[in-house]
Image (cartoon, rainbow, N blue to C red; front, side):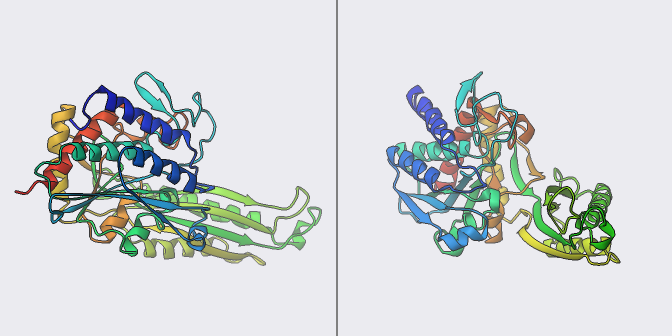
Amino acid sequence: MSISGEAEEALQVEFLKALVRVPSDNPPGDCAPHAEATGKLLEELGFIVERHPVPEPFVKTYGMKSVVNLVVRERFGTGKGPVIALNAHGDVVPPGEGWTFDPYGAEEKGGAIYGRGAAVSKSDFATYAFALLGLKQRPEGLDGTVELHFTYDEEAGGFVGPKWLIEHDLTKPDYAISAGFSYAVVVAHNGALHLEIVVRGKQAHAAMPETGADALEAATAILGAIYAERRRLMGIVSATPGIGSPKITVGLISGGINTNVVPDRIVMRVDRRLTPEEDGTSVEAGLNALVEAAVSGMPGIDIECRRIILAEPLRTLPGTEKLVEIIQKHATEVLGETPPATAVPLYTDARHYTAAGVPTVLYGAGPRSILEANAHAADEHVQIHDLKAATQVIEATLRDLLTAE
């Protein structure tokens, strides 16, 4: 078992509750306070914590206010064995409406912990920290290094989180495991392109709209083209099981001056999900052309398309099968069933590790689906038995990886 005794199981639950009680909403992305709270909790467990603040100009580039990445390195034996990174993110989406629990209350009910980030992915701060704690308690026969990478910009793309750590030579892992679910080993996921579309026209009095150039009218044409594209994409199915079809959504719209003024500026944010077969740059070029064509011939209308995020899909690398095999073996022992190796239609920080050539899977504390956990929705929660099970599986997996053959 990864946790020795009921006292330490209770400690793990309290550790997670403490993380949930400290807000780390992104936006606005002021996450340094949560990193400091987490660092202190980890130090109370006996870990040495490296704090890597990201300079403000880089943080602001991704629409955030503060980011401090946390790294814990535990070396076992000679340290010549593999380096294994465990990555989870502490930033969370804002709570939104519809909660029946306090989003920051970390209330426990029916064997579950409720609160924003309880499932995605503060739970795996607890999973990975306590799995590593289990290794420290029984280190005999182990050789290699385990690193905890607790980062804070997954909701903004992970560019100043895992990507920052890798590009600044702060880590060179041989394998990586990222936050995931207890009942599946994720080996691939889709990517995402976020575009900001600015539609500019000319304001005019509402009594004489023909004297202006209506940016909202042009935006309506763009919306029509995007929703037609959505219907077209539904007919395309990825060859990667679990991914499904490419998706496109307009998530934000703003603009206008007043009720009696022809709007001269409309801004839209578009989310385009990429399948592993797609190339992000090509999709972006096609979407830009779609937008331009939608307003072609409209006098006085100017269009600007600006990339916010381009997150390429997570693709399965050679060596991933070793992680899958070991995790499945131990998950079968703990859960009584074998979690399938699958893909999911979302994007995560794990792609930054595979982009650096590191075999990576997603596995951690969670249910059978995102919907089951209410992830990114009201009353987000994680079952305590899933937290315990994932911790056992991760510790056993690390032991296998760090044990010399």
